[in-house]
Length: 82
Image 1 (cartoon, rainbow, N blue to C red):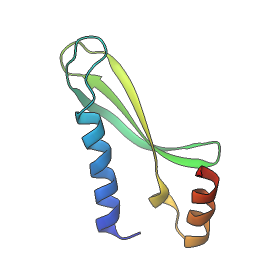
Image 2 (spheres, one colour):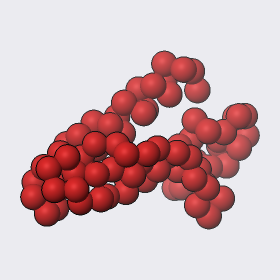
Image 3 (cartoon, one colour):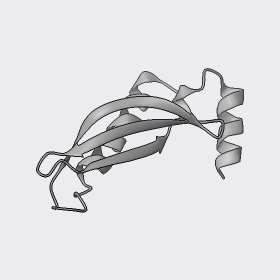
Image 4 (cartoon, one colour):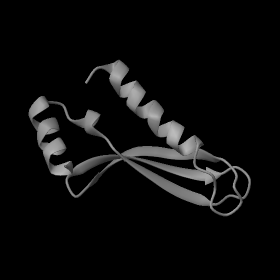
C-alpha cells in the first residue's frame, strides 16, 4: 500500500468520525487520542474521541490493513476478514 493510499484510508476514518453525531447531544466528536491496537491478531486503528459540546466519550475502531509490512500477511488478513 502506498503512502497516498494510506492517507486516503485514514482520511476516510476521519470522515466517518466527523459525520457521526454524539448520541447524547448531537454535537461533533474530536479526536482525543489515536493508536494502533491488535485485537484477535488483527490490527485496528483506534481513535478515542470526545464530544466538543457535552464531553461524552466514544471509541471508533477501524481495521488497518496498511499496518502489515508484507503482501502475504495483508492477504491473510483480508481472507480472515471475509
